[in-house]
Image 1 (cartoon, protein in one colour):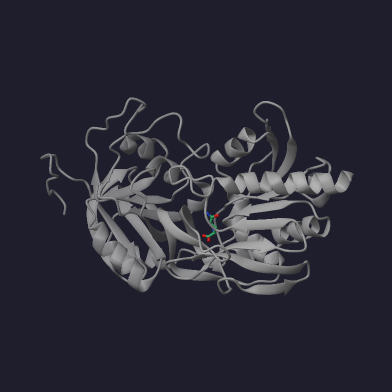
Image 2 (cartoon, protein in one colour; image 1 turned 90 degrees about the vertical axis):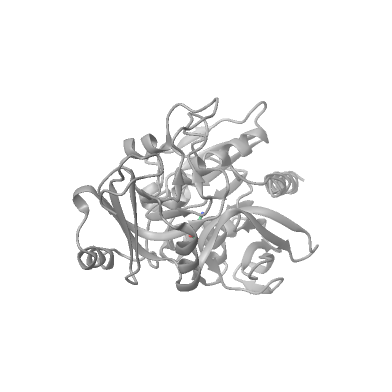
Length: 386
Ligand SMILES: NC(=O)CC[C@H](N)C(=O)O
């Protein structure tokens, strides 16, 4: 590949993507030059690359975009889901040479380079995605510039990197200090959110519904949460293996014991599930995209949802089970593969979903879940004062 020409006639700087099973993809350096290691996963969203790149749940992952053209709308100052790019590396087919959008302030290439994110372009992302579908998400590395070496040498570096299974990552993305996102208009509720890697659109959706959100670091104690006198407790999305989150799981149990209305999204669904006694497992290649169909086990209604997860809860569609907090059920499941997509507790005020009602980019089919959380808090507050 060295010295090969790109479609616009300029020389490519070589880059290599090496998978832990020895498969090698050669392409052109994109974003920062150097080395990056992580788990390679594919995302099928046709839009929303800026939101994907800044989603803390992608920490330590090399994201492959199946949409062949990436970067067409550049990078803007409004769409970030957090204060930085979190993906560890970026794999694309055909990067835009001339970004064009009225909100764009710079190119995606520059945004990646400034953030030090090593990427690779000119990769046959269809072949790569089929490989991951067949063999599973796995460790991989992108190498360019001074980091290039023999395939064997690069493979050895990939094999030395820790796997995603067992990875305890939420502590690396959580806020250092608690902060408050005020309600829009009149404050109706105060909610404590445990920040496992929260996306900016979640507080925004809450604020719109009159919720004042207190975003708390992962290390927060039961006393820290209760000192806010919350009307509700929220468990956010986040990176890594839910099995490692003993502290968050115990905190969740404490909130369930106190019957504080609880809502969880994605990682939050897995944490609630584990608090109820379910197990989690690593999926072969996960769900990452903005068109995943989810079925409501009760009504049979389908929602098209945004998703980004590689772990899932064990359970059957519609299954009811007993937990230390009474009966609960698998309320939602994926129409593609039957995996658990949501939980509802029947004896305590708690529910959660594996998908993203705060989706941005993405469909808004599930946005009403925030209203459901409001209804739950209303009901509970009424019951308390009655
Ligand atoms: N978006 C998320 O919250 C992801 C949850 C978890 N890290 C998973 O991959 O399954």
